[in-house]
Image (tube, rainbow, N blue to C red):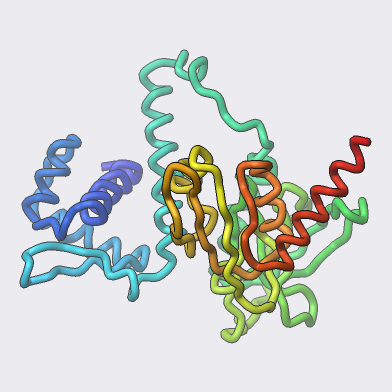
Amino acid sequence: MSKHGTIRRYTLEIEKIRRGQLPSFEEIKDYLFEHGFEISSRTIQRDIEQIRFEFGLEIKYNRDQNGYFIDYEHSINIESFFRFLEIVNTAELLTESLSDSKDALKYISFDTGGGLKGIENLKPLLKAIKDKRKISFNHFNFHTNKTRKYSLKPYLLKEYQNRWYVVGIFGNLKEFRTFGIDRIEELEVKAETFEVDKKLNPVEMFENTIGLVYSFSTLQIVILSFTPTQGKYIKTLPLHTSQKVLIDNDTEFRISITVIPNYELTQLILKHGDTVTVIEPEWLVDEIKGDLKRTIEKYK
């Protein structure tokens, strides 16, 4: 079976375990059969072992209830793994559609955000991160409108809004810098290796932020009130993994998120226009008011 087929099987197994109430081995097997996979019990057991080994997702068995569940507490990179499955399965479904008919592209509209620019750098960047090798490249800065050469210790590849970024340590700094791969040219993976600073974990840093701009400020609870209609979208596509629903009725959809406020949070709030109202913290209320007033002034 192709790698795509294996990933699709993994996805179905995880989907059944996530959505089911501790499904039994036979229930998982029947679910796979319904979706075109007739496989042995040993293959399912091997899949569970491979999912744990390759992706760090802990699937465990509850003997009392004779069913399987995901141990979120002891799993690693859960959100990244689920996003990975989403990308791979979308690609497979589109590939199958194109194989059936070349006309399929007539009925598909992609976001034209230019997300493919620099995509050829993903593979060498990922290898450099895994092998702990320094990299050098030229990078264009939108603010200074200049291109500068950098030498970087790469730690992480991050996707945000259909664009990819490499996160690493520049020079002797002890904090991370983020570079858009669409603006990287003349990438070179060096033979020189570097030692990873175990005190710095970019994944953990970005967990508490929205987007790319992180800081070492304190976590804060942000409370936002949406119109009921907009709330339906926010419910199905949460703003952040910490999102909690506080009120959900015919007049208001109110949530809280626990994040380190940054530029992207402000932009995300402004994007929702008059469908959202900031309730807390008070300083963020004032900041959004100021942004809106300055915007109105430009139209006078």
